[in-house]
Amino acid sequence: KTLSDKFLDGLAKVCDTEARKLQGKPQVLHVIRFIKVFIEENPLCICADEISAVKRLLTGDNDEVKLKQKTSEIVVKGHQEQYFINFRVYVPDNYPLAQIVPEITQHNFPAFLHIHFQAQAVEIARRCVQPPLKKNPKDPPFVPSPSLQPTCEYLIECLKKYPLELCQLCHERALPVNPVNESAKKGKHSVEKIYCGHMFHLICLHKYMKTPPFAGGKLCPTCGKQIFHDKWKISSEVMETRWAHKQARQRELEEVVDFME
Image (cartoon, rainbow, N blue to C red; front, side):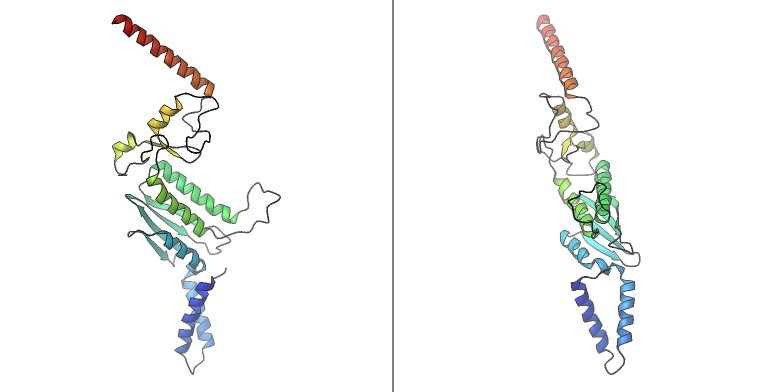
C-alpha cells in the first residue's frame, strides 16, 4: 500500500500538532501509536487522491460522497435532472492490488441500462488488476493500477450522459424527461441500446430496420457501425425480400381500392 504525497503532508502536519502537545516529554512512541491507530481507523486513506477526484466530478447540490471507514466503503449519490444513481464501492484490504467491488444500490434508469452500468463497472475494475486474456507481445509487462477512480468516473459519466442522450434517428431525447412516466416508457420512449453504444427509440429503430437500403446490413447513422441486436437477427437479403413482398401487397391493395372506386 502507498499513501499519496498530499495525504502524507497533511498527516505530517497532524503529527506535528500531536508532538507539540508533548513538548518536554517523550514523543516518538506517542506519534508512532497515533499514526498506527489513524491508519487502522481510516483504511480509505490509501485512496485519498482518488476520492478527491471523484468528489470533483459531482457538482450538483444533491450530489454527495460519504466515507464509511469502519466497513471500508464509499457511498456515492449523483443526480442529473430528474435521474439519479446511488452506488457504493467496497475497497479491499489489499487495494490497489485487488479490485474494488462496485454495487449500484438505487437508481431510476431503465432496467437494461442498470444491468449495463453494473456489468461495465465490474469489468473496468477487473481490467485494472488483471492482465488481458489475449496479451499483445509488443505490450509492456502488465502492472496493476488503482481501480476506484476509473470505475467511479464511468458510473458518473453514465449518470450525466444518458438522461441527455438523443435518439440517433428522430434526434429527440431517448429517455423520457420524467423517469416515472411509465406511459412514455412503453410508447415513444421505449428505448433500445445497440452494440455500438448509441440509443434509439424502439419505434424509430423498428421503422429504420425495415426500410431500404438493406445491402451490407443496416448501419448506425451516427458512427457508421453495423447494427447488431437480438431483435433483428435476420440477414439483409431476407429483409429486402420481406420489403419487396410488403410493397407488392400494398400495390395490390391500392389496385383493389382503385377498382372499387
